[in-house]
Image 1: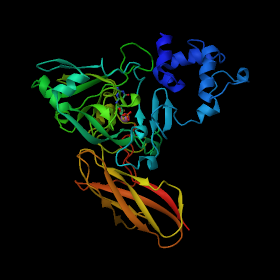
Image 2 (image 1 turned 180 degrees about the vertical axis):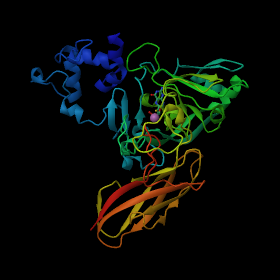
Image 3 (image 1 turned 45 degrees about the horizontal axis):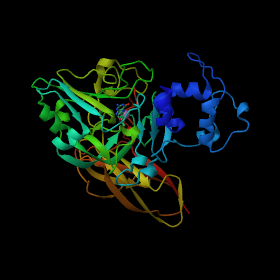
Length: 434
Ligand SMILES: Nc1nc2c(c(=O)[nH]1)N[C@H]1C(S)=C(S)[C@@H](COP(=O)(O)O)O[C@H]1N2
Ligand SMILES: [Mo]
């Protein structure tokens, strides 16, 4: 078992993602079922030396479980990803700093990673199978080749935002990954429409919900236990904007973004977009898989006091994500000479359309309308930009506020909720003018 993994995962982080226990055992000689770690040894020492780029003369002095600075200082260390900030390694979660999200189409290297479990080891597109079953007239098992041949292949720019993006700004603090701004991306996805596949399978009249299954495994290592299995109401599933995707930005999907096959359900919480997709089954009840029940991806039906305990029965499942924007140029903390500054970013609005974006340099006392590019297609984020003029030297903040086509704007302050979802409060950056 260790042998094949050895060959496949050439770096420590790839191995950690695939099998952290194996790494602990091999690199640090951890004593199973205890927290005690042994010493760097044999194969582990060789791996470590490769990673730091040289032999380690004093390796005997390294404390047990020790991660060398050269590795610790590496932001992610995963091939094909660049500039991401790591929030957790097991499961692996990493977000993108706002100023690195400036491209209209998010490069694969900059697409955030949100894993609830451990990515599968096997991601071979030639042997991958997708099962469509449950309440359908014609259950199907499809290869990626079948999908390409039997259905129209389309390419669309689709925004994916994690329901917990912005959680770090809640007060009082709530548990979970402390996402700041960067659990959002708009890559160009290629695949077939989920609706076309479901129509081919023949959705029965009594279907109310989809249920999505992926090939990732639970962090506990328990066999058959899914880390996450979410679904959407059948009406949302039949929206032609949803894709079963096998292509990302003109290439294959990145292993951490669900290779070789995933759902992209734009407009709704990223959790609906199952990665490493192996099965979609149709149900006559609201799906009750892991992360569908309890307080997961649910918010209070009525506003609550910050810190309040909210009973589960007063929590509703999150649907469309709220209107939001980012300032991606310039990065925060900039010092500028001269009085003019170009600012730009993106805006998106779940299943709604972005209607306008405004910017302020005087803490919201007055607003200036930003220019807004057309979206490439529905559910793509829209580029906005503005030219600012500062009246005199000093400290400024640039605030951006998007408004959707229902007239709803981003709030200044956040409506607190127990799990820290849907934080769409305005993004602001600081600028010093000299
Ligand atoms: N199989 C599987 N699919 C998954 C997840 C997961 O943990 N396992 N995480 C979901 C969540 S919560 C989000 S926000 C998106 C993130 O997609 P990304 O990691 O490609 O950015 O994937 C979703 N799909
Ligand atoms: Mo998420």
